[in-house]
Structure formats: structure tokens, C-alpha cells
Amino acid sequence: MEILWVLMALLMIGFALGPIMMRRRAGIQQVAPGDPDAADPANYGFLRQEELDIRMPGPDEDLLEVLDLVQRTQDHRAASQLLAGTETEGERRWQRVQAFAGAASLELQQRPGGVSDSPGGQWLRVWRAEQAKDAGGAAVHAEFLVQQAWRTSSPGTDEFRIIMEEARSACGDAALLAPGDPIPYIIELSVARGLGYSQPEFEKLWLKILDRDPAHMGAHLAALHYWCEKWHGSRETAYSFAEAAAARAPKGSLLAAMPLFAVFEHLPEVNLVSGFYESEVVTRAIHGALYAVHSARPDDPMLAHVRHLLIFFLVRSERWSEAMDQLVHVDGHVGALPWTLTRDPAADYAVYRALAVAGYEANGGSPATLSR
Image 1 (cartoon, helix red, strand yellow):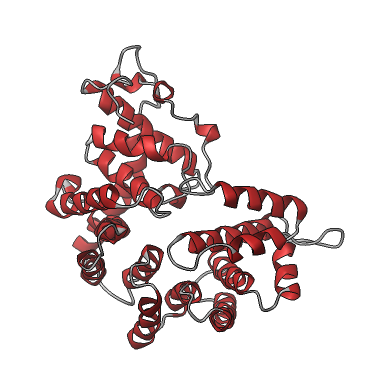
Image 2 (cartoon, rainbow, N blue to C red):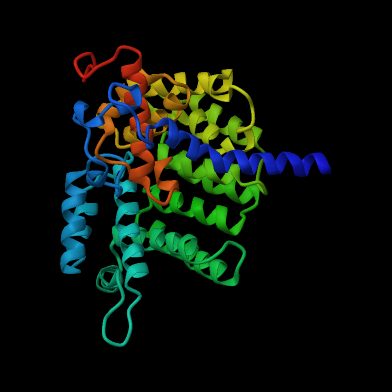
């Protein structure tokens, strides 16, 4: 028992000091001119930290324009039209549903409302009231409830369970309005995680998603979170799920990157292992993700998600040139794992970008040698 407590203490110390050490290596302290740590990301056309967009992993100009319009005017109609014109197949509709729900949730958090003003996200309430049969609005409302549960209450509390039960009912309503759409069921995956669905309940839900879109990357990532919860499965269970998804991935699918996400989900459990980022399990997962990136369609909405996670692992593995190859594709948008798990996603991303630039130049790289 004493050994267990010692190991836990070492783990917490290592986890706390890890980001600090990375920031030191990134050159946040004073460095001398010509030192590799003094390399300037701006020389590569990268945006300044304060210019980085933390809302999305990659560009979606139509979504950004509509989001700005809806939040400025508090009129939901542009959002309804955009979702109505977004194809059910693929990942883009799911990302847009998440974005609208997240915007409403953040508005409500920032402006809860009171005697003299209306609460934030009022446009979503009006949307549901005026267009009760709108499948897009129903999906956004269900996702909004899920995000509210995780943002405003703690799992296991009565408040959390009440909101999650409401989200579960909202998912059912959304599914009735769009029978062939996997999104209501994908949203329910977060409900399954929050309410602690049994394995048979979860598998019944998962089959509904596979019947509608068996290669949906967002759905697989949401399901991975379920398997990663300690009360649902071990690390080996999560790895098995990810590896099975990668093995059956159709050509051009980003599902081949799933093992890398599984490794990331369990980093706290393996952080003490010496040379972990050069280990076989990480190397194999990185290679799978690189293969997925190289074979995916350039317009795949999930491509940026995989590139961002690759940057994290490639920098940790000191594979500087490969990290730079990913950076040139995603720089400007940082709304993705692992950055969104920190209090300041832009700052955390900037640290890893600085490390990549410094390592790249220390090994003979320069803006002239970087292919785009």
C-alpha cells in the first residue's frame, strides 16, 4: 500500500512539472541570439499567439460567418438554414452542431440573465419554440444540454443527472425528426458516459450509429471516451476498441488514427515510463495517424483534429521536421485536442510550436527548406 502511495505521488509530481519543463524547453526564459530556442515562428508565416482562433480545429468560413451573425443579432434563422443545407453524411454537420451548441452554452455561462437582461443563448430557445420540427435545432438543443451538464455541474450530483436525463430525452426527440441521421445518437454517447449506461445499453446505442455511418470519426472518438472511463473499461479495452476501428477503416478514413487518441486518453497512466514517447506503442500509433493523414481527403473536417494531436506526439518524440509538416497545415486554428484541455489553448499550442521550430532549426531546418 505504501508503494502505491509513493507511485501516485510521483505521478502527480511528474504530471504537474511536465508542462513547466516543456515551457522551459520552448524558450520562455531568456535565450541568447542564435540559440535554437530563439527561433521565431513568425519567420514561417505562423500567426502570433493572440491571433490564434480557439473556436475550431480548422477553417469553416461558412460556419464562422453564421456564428458571428447569430450571436450579433440573436436571430437563429441563419443557423437553421446552414444546418438544413449541410449534408447528413460525414463529419461537417456534427462539428457545426457542436459549434452552435457550444456558442449558446458559453453565452449562457457569460450572461446568465437577470432582472434587466435576457440570458445568453436566447436565440436557441427561440429556435426550438418557433421551429419545433426542425431537426437541426433539435440536435443543437440536445448537444447544448450535454455541454451544460459537463460545464455547470459535477458528475454524480442530482443536478448533473437531471440535466443528462433531459439531454437523453432531447436526443430521442431529435432522432424522431431525422431517422437516418447519426448525430442524435452520437450526442447520446456523451449521455451514456455521464449516466453510466451498462455495456448492453451502450452497445445497442452504438449499433444504431454503425447502421447509419459506420466510419464516423466523431462518433468513434465519443465512444472511446465511454470505454476510457474507469467504471466501464480498462486501458486495454479502450486500446482494443481503437485498434479494431483502425483495422476496419475504409481507404481514406481517418479511423486509422484512433490508436493515437487512445494513447492520449491514457497518458497519465503511463507518464512515468522511461522513453515512453519513443516506445513501440506510441511509434506504431503515430505511424497509423500519419498514414491516415496522408491518405485522407484534403477537405475531411476531422483532418485538423488528427494533425493537432500529431503535433503533440511528434514534438514529444522530438520528430521536429514531421511536426513542422503538420503545423503548416493547421496553424491559425487551435480548437482541438490536446490544447482545448488547458486553460489557455493558444498559449499551450504556441509552446509546442516554438519547440518544433527550435528543434527543426537546431537540426539544419529553415523557412527555405520547409515544404508547404
